[in-house]
Length: 281
Image 1 (cartoon, rainbow, N blue to C red):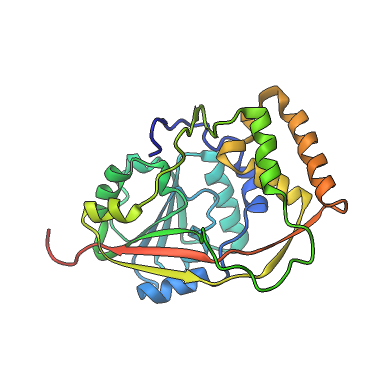
Image 2: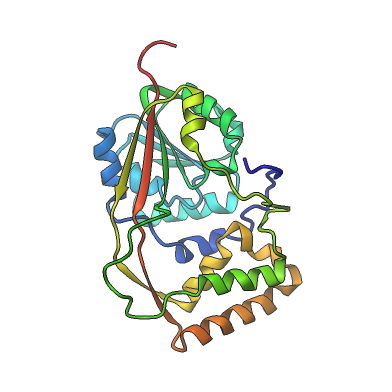
């Protein structure tokens, strides 16, 4: 959990409706690549912790007998359930809970996944709990965008989204320290998951990078949705200034791309896995 920060229910309040449109997808084929790496065969169960609207749960569900998505934001879970219906996924269910509520009577799992959510948790406590919830040889999986990918080999056909300027605009409205729910991330979010998981008793670390690099064309509405999908610029943080912020954000985007069209390279997906020991204890 970030130093000096306490979780509260408003962390992603109002973001669920913007998440699918605003966030870039993970690399095409990431689910199949993970299934191959872990030898998934349609048996066992998946637990996706901090599942949001099911961005990872739904592509992985077909490799398991059952998939369970856990998230404390009920709007995110409602969106996940709607998306499951649209995608014809009928072996997933959704549970309103925090990671710290686990095991929550959910049983045993072959894989427990965290997609850019582990840093919001009490990591030592949650890692120890997950170890107990996994079957022997089961995997703890951490999924994220690759933070330092190689430079793209092809130029963009349109302007890139002005993310740095958007960040400056958010800070003009919300202050210089990153917001997160009712609190602030003075020291950012933690990393070094390897140390946490080794301390909990996991072993056999492996890293998989799933390439992407495709050029994705994005509209101004997509970039606005990206802004509101984030914990540090969730709609509720702006209070009665939201309409003014939205107007300024769209003006910034129009200045960067008068036709309201942008392009960016889809980043590779980084997947890190650790195993629960098969031996007793």
